[in-house]
Length: 228
Image 1 (cartoon, rainbow, N blue to C red):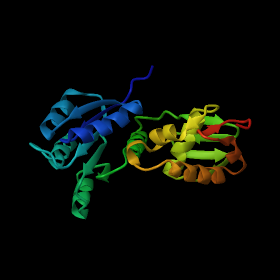
Image 2 (image 1 turned 120 degrees about the vertical axis):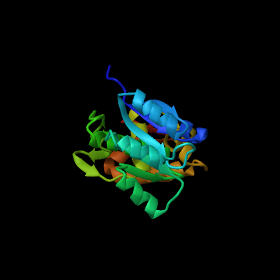
Image 3 (image 1 turned 30 degrees about the horizontal axis):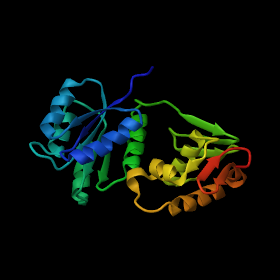
Image 4 (image 1 turned 90 degrees about the vertical axis):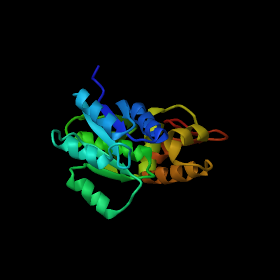
């Protein structure tokens, strides 16, 4: 079994740390946490196999800029900066210090995880290709690409996540509540009608393969060959 990549999450807000860590763990990363800049540097010097650091800007003891500056003196480890401030000067400062990605709060945890994966692939640390295939639909979770009978199609992020969930659960009736919890999770607060809208768009983009997504009346949806 391959070792899981290890990520350090640094944020003085415990709820924000838990949110980010939960999503990273769910996506098969190992996670270490630090509540301030000094603790982050202690972990950085102690742990020799960190793959990436997610670093908040505004923290006690040492802010994210100071931590980033010190790390860059000895290491090119990928760094994603998180900040509640949207000043362009802050963003430029981050890139001058060698930050790989700069994300403003509030943000979608799923988008953050997707960017983590993209950065790790660019740095050559995560080159695993995960392919799902069903009845002529081929989906690459790694590259975020979908093709239908060899023709690539464009999906929005949520449409892609929805298709992944269907393809990972072919033949299983999925309730709207389950779909909402899995695909939207922390990102969405509302009713299940948004699922119907996204399913309709997804079916249209899949063309004739959209018929593989069946409506299960009174429950939700099921991806399968035969009629539901």
